[in-house]
Length: 375
Ligand code: SF4
Ligand code: SF4
Image (tube, rainbow, N blue to C red; front, side, top):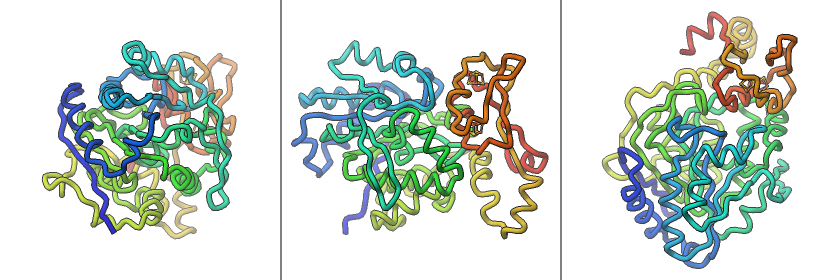
């Protein structure tokens, strides 16, 4: 069996010719002749919300531009799109994330995966709605951002596939899968249904994010661009370089197992064999995921009494209403003072509000013990 390869380049900034060189080399080395055969390509970035590129929340438009230029040079029809989180306006997302600019300069089609038709599919008993756009394109390039994630600890290539689920259906899936384990199973089902369609995945880690990602963390210069035709291999290498272990990411082990990949067999460029990014802060997301997992049930119950956290709306709130409309369990509602408030008993800690608030006005209230473990 062929061992999967992960390509890695140290790239300092979003210099277009440098990006084109890396991406062009990787694509031309792909043995899969789908790139030659197929006429239409879907580029699927991470467009979580309306964040400017310098915030390092969304895939940088220069990375997308390099991919667009590669495929246009091959005379392919290029579709570019995602389904942003919650109730945010897709038009605003396109404008702020630099997609409108790309569509003005290149003959591409922007695709709103929130409103495209979808297919209802079933993966081993898990029912998932997936955008029809995925099935209309013979080439699919999945372009993730390199970040921590408050619910899933890490977000890379596999988590980026969640954007293939249309619009508010994503919130519904959060409601149905409130804990990390069940959400991981949902992600695995999405991966199982989409994996044969994904031609190549890229992680934009030139600027990434640590701390309380995926939107309220700290933009960090990681100086890395990575790619692979194997999503589990790519996420294994990327998450390890950030300091995670496979057991920290419940969906990753399942995806590796699905592909029969042994982590130590993944090929990386020699200079990155033991590479780890210095100074990455993953404590806050790692503790949320793993804090209770290793305790016996009775101890875990007692620990929950002293170790807890929940979102609170801060004074930075501009009353846009995104959190109220996006909370999958209606735990946020307008209060008499005109600001939203969180009902902590209803809250399932999916962190969608924290993820989607455009002004990072959702803080995390932590108990004394949680403060000791989380930054
Ligand atoms: S907390 Fe954030 S998302 Fe919610 S209304 Fe205020 S600004 Fe909007
Ligand atoms: S209040 Fe926030 S974290 Fe809690 S369930 Fe609603 S969106 Fe999720």
